[in-house]
Structures are given as C-alpha cells and as structure tokens.
Length: 324
Image (cartoon, rainbow, N blue to C red):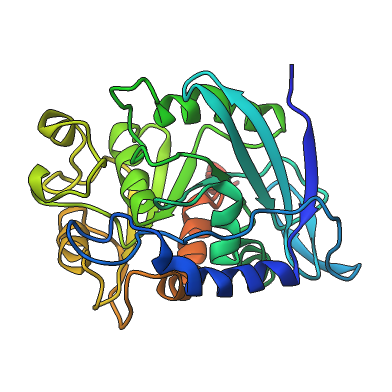
C-alpha cells in the first residue's frame, strides 16, 4: 500500500531555517574530525511544517527532455512522506523536492544528509527548495531532489541491522518509481557524512549512480582516526573505504571542501583519486555556509549529468548514381 503524502511549501521559512542552521550547527558533536570540536552537520533545525503556502502563481516554461513543464515562481514544492522502513527498523521521512509542475517523468538526485540531520532538516539546512527552483529557472535541466533519513549510520549497513543502503535500493526507489520518476539512472549528493555516503553509493552501485556531488565528505585514512560510531570495527571501515579507490566506471564526480575544513586534505586526495571533473576548494569551513555556497554549482553539475543524452543524428541518405 502506498504511503500517504503531505505537500508542504517551504518558502521564506526555509531560508530562515538555513540561517538558524548556521547558528545551531556547532551545538551537536559529529564527524568533523576525531577529537576536533564542532559538528559534521546542520544541528537542530526545525523540520518541514504542515502549513501550505508558497510562491506567486505563474512561472516560466522549461524543457524536461520529454516535453515542457512550468517552473512556478518561488521555491520548489516539497512533498514529505513518512513510511516504515524494514531495512532500518523504524519510521523514516522522505522529502521530494520538485522544481516544476506539469511533468512527473523527471530524473532523480538522492540527497544524503550529514550526521545529526534528517531529511526535512537537510532540505532546510541547504535551502534546497529555493536553490533547486533557481537552478531550473537559470536553465539547469530540471530534476527532482529526494532527501531521506539515514540516521547516523554513515550510509552503510551496520552490525545492528540498520541498513540505509538497502532502504534506498529496495524501499525508496520503488516509491519514487510509483510516482512516475526515473529511477534507473541517478545522481547522488551530500555533505559531511552524506558526502561520504554519496561517494560510497556510487562506488558500490555504478550501474545506478552516474554522478556524485560531495561537499566536505567525512573520510579518514585509518580506522583509528575515524569519528566515534562511524564504523562498527576496523573491518567495517576497510570494507567501506572510498579513499585509495579508483573512480567507479561511468561515474562523474564533483567534490567541494573549504580550505579551513578538517576534511580538506582528504577531499583533495579523493578529488585526485576519483578524477573529479569539477572541484571547488575555496575559502570556508565545515559548516552550512560553505555547503550552501557550493550548492548552485553542484546542482548545475547534476543537471548536466542527468540531462537526456542527445539523440544520434540520422544517417545521411544513400547516394544515387547520377542519371544519364
């Protein structure tokens, strides 16, 4: 049975929540570095509300590859779902952010949150509804961003039985397929714990993930240096390493990290090892301000990766011998 859905529009409150995220970010300990003060994620942000409001009517037309849809003025529509996840053994929330109306057959980018966040807080932390609508109005190929709860699992199967990877593959994607979205060719993006998770998902499923945009991915060169609780054991760490691995075949990579971020060195290493075609390593730290600043370029990168492949040109007509 399909879950019930509630549509919410996060307009002005979303930007405010993002600003609050910057202030509250440091209240939670996370994965910024073992023994380093600060959080790896967005802190205690308010989730989506059940109030319906939103942008002004009207909008601009945009090609989705299969026709023309309308990008309304104002933020994108955020549809929040709660379902029971057998893979995670708990109720989880999922937020589907769509910048267009009049088109269901859109590609999908999974959004994996950082430690201490969940799906609705992650949307608010980045101001994703506003940023995605702005990107579509600027000409980026429209796609749907889908955030889902991953807890503090580091987006891989845990000894406790909590398995966010299986949740994505066997529970989230079928739900999105039922909504008419394209789920056979995905992108993934995330920050901190979620940046690592997006890279890991592509490494393990290159037949499914074609592009990754990772901000400040939380990675360590040795198990003993990792944040408490990030892995179950040294063997678990080794089984889910991204550093030191070659790029997954057919996957395009973009990696961003601030120069004051404790993950700056490993992010540079990963960008080189994965042959990242795009990268951003300017000023900034391990915080929502930097992640929001990187978002427009990341959305454009994802849009290019998910754009429909150009149709091959028809062969020229066969030549005929001259008459006479």
